[in-house]
Image (cartoon, rainbow, N blue to C red):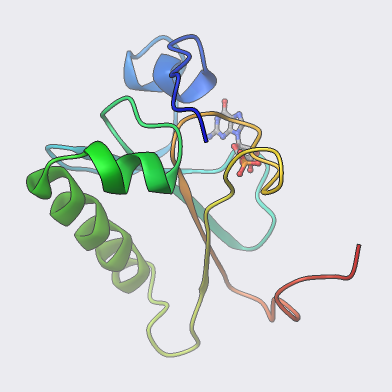
Length: 122
Ligand code: 5GP
């Protein structure tokens, strides 16, 4: 997968402060904010501040510090939102097959209702 980063994408604009967001938590290398069109009672997006398109791009090129910060923030948000007991789902869409709309790495944290089986048949 090509990793050309489009710095005009909407999450890049959020990171530059050009578009407002409902921040849940910010760390040195990452930002968590609520999805503008929530698909569940809890729908938080977690993004790295660096210019990474997909999870594999991030895994390949991010520093250890960025990766640790990011993974810890995903877990911290799940706990802070009170999701430990009932659980949650993480989704990270990549590219065409994953139907990724915003080309900046993000993990969706979804919870707050039964989410059904993982995938529907196409
Ligand atoms: P994808 O399909 O790329 O995995 O998901 C992109 C997500 O970004 C969607 O759930 C969409 O609702 C969310 N989104 C798109 N634009 C904005 C925005 O301007 N602000 C916020 N908070 N979320 C957005």
